[in-house]
Image (cartoon, rainbow, N blue to C red; front, side):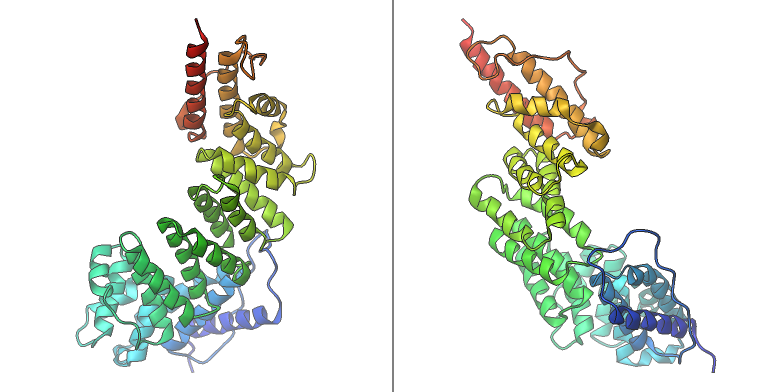
Length: 415
């Protein structure tokens, strides 16, 4: 019997899944080159339902942190797509196969199969509406997708299709109806626990909660994510976005808000906790949140080895926050001048230059002015003022506000 390409790649993917279950996933995805693709042993030809289910099993391994599954996913998608396009017309007479094709398109499979299916007559409902709506969504026609899908009741759909449609409905609702999006994502998480679909729904819900300012639920779900999906391939991106969202809550405003960050990060090991405190401090500086930057950098420095690159980064963020306060200007300025540039990343060097230039501008304003806390600050030779477009621009407005405040103080003190 002739074996289809999808049959072979399905078997290969299943082999990867079995191997993945036999060995635990590493705490952090290993670096280095991608894993070699699995061999393609012979296997019986399946059908769209089997192929899409195999894809979903592979994607669930991605949520568990399998880099091999992540690298294999595009090949499996390409093979399934090719065989779906080559499938005989009679295969689409089965509702389960139509639903599998819709799920496939919304799971990264792209629009090709749905374009062909929606050009046919007699699909029946609700599959015809779901297929047209899914096609509009994957092709970026959001207004049409919203019109077709927003009122679809997923209660009677199989869980995998209901989850895919629910994620799509939530994505379409987030800009204008975030509360509805949160309710939809809650349902998706309950439908498919432990899957990549749940992982994606949880990530989206957390940041939708950030959009509406619900810090309490945001904290609860962020902790849940870090407990349930600590090794997901997407966890790194999640942590970067988490740091940004926390600065939007102005976590440095008071100790109670900052305690939220501490409780979330307590779910991580020391190194991961240190790294995320550094990301929060860096993000806070770029957003002009100097109180949050100081608090987060102090927490990071407590976890850094002395003299390490991480410690240098922490000192940079703390010092950059200190120079915009008269009480800490001198210590921050001294720290900036003492930092070892070789230990800073390419992203941090422009921040150092901006902070040094700002410190010198403030120092020149304070030099020789009796009665001010930094009256004896020695101004170094002037640097060229940085172009805000070339550096961490968000530090500039905060520092400029401080300079303006100093100018006001000086004008009042001048006879």
